[in-house]
Picture 1 (cartoon, rainbow, N blue to C red):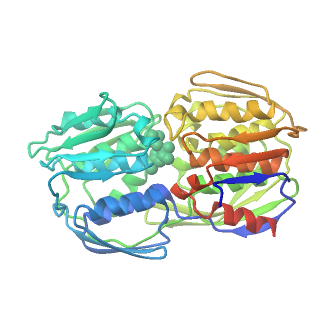
Picture 2 (cartoon, protein in one colour):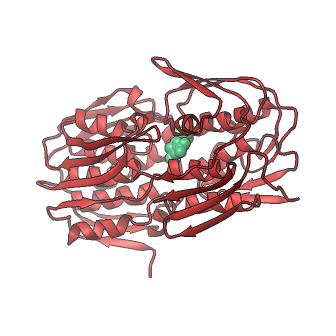
Picture 3 (cartoon, rainbow, N blue to C red):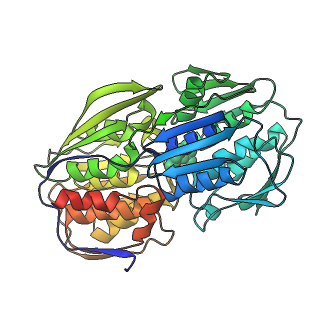
Length: 439
Ligand code: S3P
């Protein structure tokens, strides 16, 4: 089977109920915390994707027993000091920045050196943003070119708490420092630009020593050394970042309607919803509930509404950081010129996504002006693509693949979209759900 998809027809009007796969950020965090719990933890609806399997393989290398039956996972934790570290241990984070960065936080106190590697895409990403704060705790990290994977971490038994200013709005950096703070005597103090807060919520649910003060533009987090994690069961909600492709698809499809069941709508993750609603989309949350500190709801989207351009406030960026590629597609169909700024972090993802966003628009002939950290998109509500487009996704970025599918199914034209396998990292059921919408 070739690793590509051909699309020559737009999607017809649909009215469906769907469920998307489990949340990736929460799945990886559950695996990491459960591996340190004292006893058996169970997860339902775990995301079974390459990124989460890489997390499971990583904790297995520490001697932790993990069993999987479909999306049901059991982890037999050995306690906070229960990792067995063999000589010359190598961990492979594959494509996952979240796994690669978070796990280092838990390794600041392991005196045996551990090597961390990743795939081609992850090996191009910045790990200095993690090694800088973790070195201040007292761990030693050696990186390729001072910045990249592979790296070696050697922890210390004499850790010192740190004061850390997180300015990027990166939940991965913030979480790695929280994990290291949980390993360290004394109080680690973090002042962090707002970003997704699943780590803090899980710590609070587990009664770990953390306090969070929410200030207007940042959070002040204090963490100290944990003694024990109780085993914990978790039913993973659906991922808003996976839902985003279907939300955009519906917004761009005339007279279509979609209900997405039981999605995590944590306020730090719903930048996409705020942005698309400001642009005139009809999106509502139904059956809202709380689950272990996280907000969950069904999302109802009605398509084909007239869309306005947006001058997107930067404060919405971090809550929509994984969704901008599809937001740019919506802007292409809006009336007027949209502007998105302070987005340099987008070029730090699995591939340089700000560049990719502009490139996909260029290929269709949609006028845009892109810089290192901003993009202006000249929208046209009547736009129809007439071109033949080939997407060769050289770093195999899953979100570039799925965004291209949404563009092909809503803007028309003839598309050849390579690197279908990339969806295995985050959303293996994506194409199956697309096919269900066609029935
Ligand atoms: C994630 C944080 C974000 C996001 C990534 C998942 C997490 O990355 O892009 O997909 O689970 O903490 P940054 O922390 O680099 O912004």
